[in-house]
Length: 328
Image 1 (tube, rainbow, N blue to C red):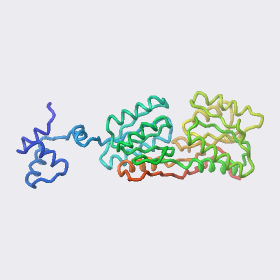
Image 2: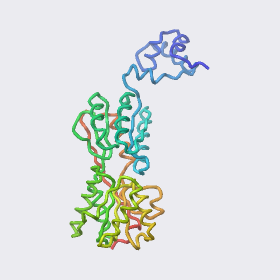
Image 3: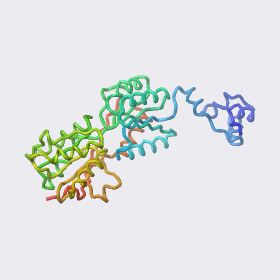
Image 4: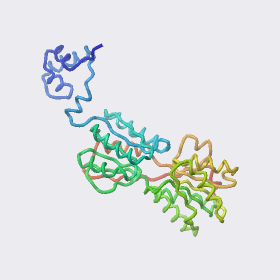
């Protein structure tokens, strides 16, 4: 069955295709002309061609979102927030998952640029910064999520957590539960991980607890969690709480502790980042990010695109359950 075209609508309404386009886009035409066009649109069940509209507009109505790892619970609510704001403003969302492949990340940003997206949300590391800056310089609003933007530039915004505060919340909670020997698993060298470690270290130090350099191990894959946990537990000083500073490694680190027959929190306390569906059932204490709200604000920055670069910082929330033990 042949798809109805704008020419078919024009013929049915007795006007030119340009007039039909003007009516569909809210242009000024006589009332009786607009009525004839809308009647023809309804009668022929015409659907405007978004591709054609984007060609004339020089930009599509799609918001591009590049996620570096969909396995992280943080991104699920982030994407929901982006999608809801986009939908309320007549935009579609195009998601791409890079799985931490830096070359693929840059290629995805370029693809979004070639698609002339309405705006771009990126959660990747700094490998994409140069290409993202170029998009922003070309007039496309871009939002970097989970870390500050690399520089002040028009159309380049950021939405991030106060990661130092997140580390401090963890420090305060483990100390309140009576723990003094802390071991830490981080994931890579991203600014968020460094800031959380710094906040944790400072929070512990204020109570006279030192976080030793060899008590912090960085892993870049789940497969390395078991070896990291083994190394931390083998330190001369017995570990009484393990802190995981990245939600994407929660399952792997937690599983490594359980695999060693350790009871949480009786044998060892456990605290991690980012809330997830099974955390209440497992009794896992987390420091949560308002990822849904962060997604909403990222999309709102795309839709509204303020003239000055926006730098939004959100506060973390401690959700205390039983995995760290009882507060003393």
